[in-house]
Structure formats: structure tokens, C-alpha cells
Length: 185
Image (cartoon, rainbow, N blue to C red; front, side, top):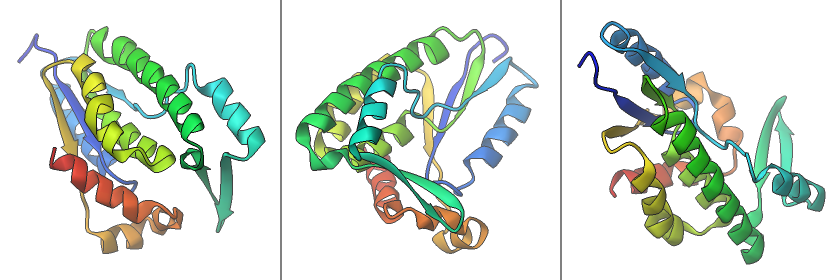
């Protein structure tokens, strides 16, 4: 295991325990290999100008609940906006895979991953069938072949107790449902 690179991607809703598990994995893996943490979600290289335009037009906005800001992309209201966003995000994700995963000289433990981005994109565009289909397959194809993916689940009541802010998001129950669906693929 000394020279073999390891790729582990952890996904799940906020408060599920990804960061805690990531820290433990890095601590254990660093005893036998060089390892780095990657937080891989919404790296907006090409989509940043588009997101600015969407903020100006009101399709991208934030709400503040009990001092916590929650961002929403209501791109699902317009098919063309959704398609443009999905194309730009595909390019951004490909760049992320190429430079942060493929070109890495170290093993990687990813706290958030491609799976989290796919769930976010479904929430944003409502193109579930397409994203879970050919869109996801095309992106997973470029990931290192020996990547292991984990979707972290935690009892909802424990998350509510420790991270009540997670439930300020109007889409949290749909997110939980989507993580369960993707786990069955």
C-alpha cells in the first residue's frame, strides 16, 4: 500500500459526519502513504460569470434564517438556464477531476465529492433522470478507476440536535432522498 494511491470520496448532507470521518481517514492513511484532503464541490471556474448574471436576474439568491445564509439556484424554472448551467458545471467538474484528482501525486480523501455536486445540480435544475444517467456516467468515467465512494448517513434526529441549521434549507428532505437514490445506483 506504500506506493499505491488511494482515492476516497465521502458524500452526504451537512451534519452527517463527513468531516469527522475524513479527519480520521487522513490520520490513519498518513501512516502509510502521502495523503491530502480535497473539498470538491462547486468549483466554479467557467460558471462564475453565469452565476453572477443569475444573481442579477434573481435566479440565484440567498436567504437568511436565524443568522444563517442559505443559497438557492432556482434554475429549474427555466429549461435553457438549466441546460447552460449543466454544461458549464460539467466543464468545471471535469477541470476539478483532471487537476485535483488525476494529476495528484498523493492519495486523496475528499470531504464532499462529485456525488454532492450531482445532488446539488438535481436540486438546482430538476433534471434528475438526465443527471443520474448520462451526465453522471460521463463524469465518473474520468475519475480515477480505483476511487471508492461512500455516502454517509446519520440519524435525522441527531443531525437536528447537533446541526439544526441544516434543516433551514427548504430542500434538505429532497437531498436526503437523492442521496438514498444515488446509493442504489
